[in-house]
Length: 528
View (tube, rainbow, N blue to C red):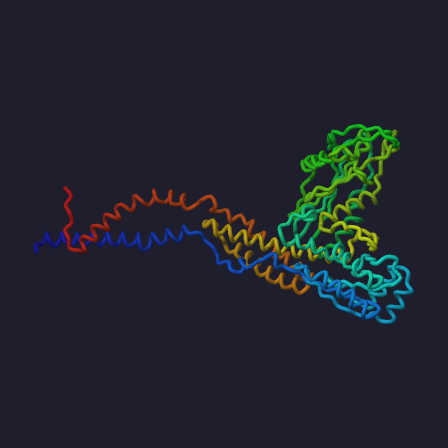
């Protein structure tokens, strides 16, 4: 072989090794590196555990103790209660039977005052424990059943058992409301109450449209502290509350009211249609200061009706005046409004008006109860529900709220995670980073733990755990990083990368062809 031939063969080897190196680097290193750097990052998620969630399987246990003067009456009442509640899937009621001690029987027969009778029962039994309730026989009742603010109901005798069951069903436990809390059923109570939240920011707005015509003397801050503050303090186990107040001047609103003559001191009133009132909220939203808080805003508005338009009276869609002692309305999941009408003497001369604080704040408390989930109780024949003696909720109402919110938060967390899992299955380019994965895993663990606590009747701990589950699930679902590649699907990815890599691949493919031919010993075609 000549020297020139050996040189040509060496150059051929060099070209082939260069081609092989280029192809090797691109295929062995380049392609895997491109594939790895363009893949969607997703941490491992517990899909199997999420798919096993079933909101209809959530249940809450509670304990009821029947205390009667004799064993026969106790078993008769307990048997009817158990039979009435055995079909309730959401509420597992454990009924205990106790014969009242002789001293307690004597005390209940001799005491006429209901409050003193409650104190006698409380000295023997732990009525302060959450998720417990006592029904106690008391023969001196004027009605079949009496229910006050404590976790105690009095019944007269065995014939009152059916009335007692109604009281437990419609006042104390409300299984239909609980059933709606763990599902998507839009019952009236669910449509009115605020969604679950760790906290609420309660804002009282005093709206004074015409300060030039009338002076309004109302200490909003002190009223909030005395009334709303006392009310929400009792609900601190459920939510964190912050309170604030503000005055809104010159926020005039055209109610399009019609003047109607009457026999009042005014000699007339102004009729405003009910559907018109909701439009007032739009004006309030535009002018009200947004609270500097991540908590949901719960609004209370006192609208001081100007003298030229007073008094306002609300009419229904059929044109009939709504009979109500106060002119107020609730906007579901927004708040409540009180239309404060001054008296006729307040608008004479230098007009000055001082609203009745007790009436105004009592109305707001009533609205707050509904907005936070405490329902109005229907009347039951031969049963008496003692009126509220203060702004604080009843003890058994607090337990009802704990059950309601725990079920609602667990069911919401389960639905959120299942929706997110379904979304991840349908859209492959959603990024799941470590923070989102940690929130999802935390929510799953809290749901499982809270469900067990609720089934055992550990109400306070179940509520805290369900709140953690709800917050973690919402945090994961609303994480902004989930949207990072949402608008960059695979077809767009290939549309961007193919024009970039295709020109590079042509010489690689040609070099690979020449390399294969060379390895097989075939001569390379000459190019003229």
